[in-house]
Image 1 (cartoon, one colour):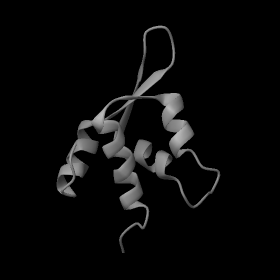
Image 2 (tube, helix red, strand yellow; image 1 turned 135 degrees about the horizontal axis):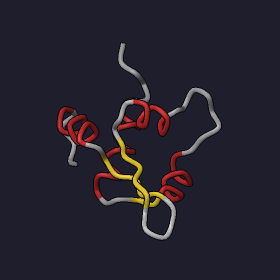
Image 3 (cartoon, one colour; image 1 turned 45 degrees about the vertical axis):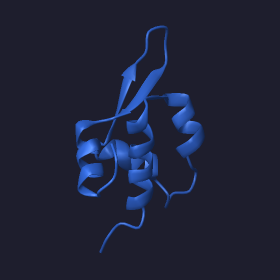
Image 4 (tube, one colour; image 1 turned 90 degrees about the horizontal axis):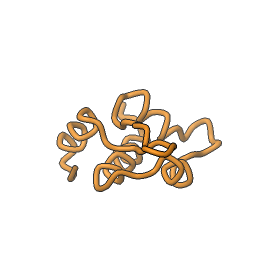
Length: 78
């Protein structure tokens, strides 16, 4: 059975693959308190996104190589 969150996970990866996003912006858009909608957590656990420190503080979120591969396999840009 396919994970019903898969399209949302790929949406997140595609969004950060388009252009790197500040971590706080990603959290504003993708964080949820719903225990069944763990899009951000699943993307991180699967290694589909990277969090890298930014000069001056904070983090930047980008699509990892695995994330770009997942997008390619799904026929999405990235």
